[in-house]
Amino acid sequence: MLAFIDETGDTGLKITEGSSRFFTIALVLFEDHDEAEACDQRITLLRRELSLNPSFEFHFRHNSDKIRKKFLEAIHPYSFQYLGFALNKNPKKLYGPGFSVKSSMYQFTCGTVFENAKPYLSQAIVIIDACGSDTFQSELSKYLRRKTAETGYQRIKKVKMQSSHSNNLLQLADYVAGVINRKVQGKKNATEYYRYLSIKEVSLRVWPD
Image (cartoon, rainbow, N blue to C red; front, top):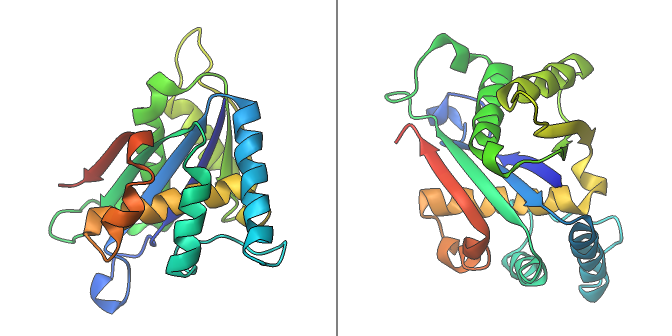
């Protein structure tokens, strides 16, 4: 099993000064490695179809509406599932000293997604968009293993950090995070984008409600 995780929004709490209202994470799961490879190749082919540079990064927040729809149409036929978690940073609902530390907030949100995903994980190779220091990456890897630990069963086989710029399936995870973030907030075109992904959704949780 392959698992790809990416996020949208930020971990800042100063919403009135420009921080995002939600910090949203998506975990995309491919049970079949060949299916993941086929989806990866389809995304590469899409760049050629759209006359884009081979190094062009599909990034939901920065891409045009046209590119977003073409990307979602391209990946729709492939067999994958996803789980999403949107952290509502409303200061009236979110409190506790841990949320004032960016790394702690990131760990909590990632950990919650993986805890929800435990029934679906089996010897998963987890690929996360590289961020932060080597120490942070190491601590995050250990944290996720603890969250999914189960006696006699290996939920996570390995955790890798890779750049989304060079990984098509991390770009897919970015798109899933972007779409569900729009859905949670009821933003423009949210319904139109979401229809490509709704059938692949295992769970989408917003917390605090």
